[in-house]
Amino acid sequence: MKHLVAYITTGFPSLEFTVDASLALAEAGVDTLELGMPFSDPVADGPVIEKANLQALQNGFKLDHLFEASAKISPHIDTLWMGYFNPFYHKGMDYFIEKAKQTGVNGFIIPDLPLEEASYYKPSIEKAGLNLIDFIAPTDSEARIEQIVSHAQKFIYLVAYAGITGSGQSEDLQPIITSIKKYSQTPVYVGFGVDTHTAKDKAIGVDGVIVGSAFVKVLLDTQLSDTQKIKKIAEIAKEIKEKINQ
Image (cartoon, rainbow, N blue to C red; front, side, top):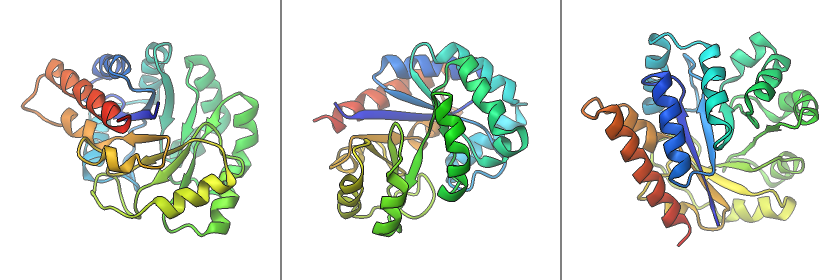
């Protein structure tokens, strides 16, 4: 069974909504949840997730809100924090490790933390029984792939194209998937540009998909009530889960 990872922005449109939406996604078949940590300059994300980040910050998001929501969500679904390195740097990795253990979160996705810097933090993260997810991009050389995936944990995040999330580009990923699997048995999940239309094709040759913008677009739809938003993202999750496992 191929896995579905879902990203939503914590605290958008509200903290209560984040908890309710997360539990609905778990019921809809999502295997792992990425709780996004709102940040003012989300460099890997496109305009959809960037807008949700900024609105969450304008609504008064604080890190304590992330911890509060995580404690309610993590008993029901495998939960990771997705955030940029700036807060980890300022608060300290040990701080986030301790908070993750307290709230039942299983690890971190930090897209702007390169391998060389990540290797400094990985030992303490692993010692705590947590995971730091590694990224592979289509531009990585075979030597670089081998270097990155040799110690990969939980899953490898394969970026579907060089660019930002939600832009809908496409590249032939099969050669890079073959290279990854040559050096690692860790599951490979593909992200960037995955939605109900692309999921089946994106899932070819990999062990799962990561979906963010397709869900956050719904969260940004001001014509829908919170109840309607939750119902719609659950329907999207069910459809994608079905398509990737056909």
